[in-house]
Image (cartoon, rainbow, N blue to C red; front, side, top):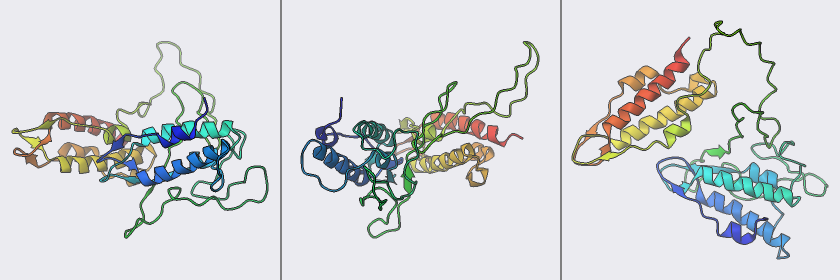
Length: 278
């Protein structure tokens, strides 16, 4: 059933700490524009231009780590619902999600109903901007859909997300050795696994310093993300560094369970070795 202004106004997202989240003010500003559009469609006052499905799909928000922020996954899922609702109402400059959308990073949006192309509607939260009394925040672009395993590529709002694949070579006869595979198709770990990893805490027994472990995992997340994107030059860690890392210990204060941390680091080192093999 179609969304209502109350659905937007009353939507709540879980907050995250000590890992990336969307800046709450940026998300709230976008939802205010969506609510205003739905109010006008129901006969209420119109405050500014209608927001389109492409603007929602191309929205970019600043991210937070030390301060609370909205869960990125929850926000992305809800924005997908909003974009589908707006497209069903005809608030789209393209006939479907596979057609070309707005230029990433900000660009002119064709107005509904034709006419000259003008600048996109102004509004905070759609591009990286300077934070009050500080340097610019990095912007986070919502990731494109990934292709399902064993199925066709997923539709992408800016066109085909993946190029057509060449025909697969014929399979060798049963029992014959197949071609060598450099690394398994599915990774043991993903950057999201590292970002969301949680360890049990210890008290009155030896534990690893939580700040040191968190900082090391931040570097591991950056490293794995770079390797998955084919940019080993941006990796911050190697498998040998993961195996040799040492953390300060705590006893009077809470710390991470050493056994759990060590087991996770073993898994991380093995994943990095898969990219280092010739």
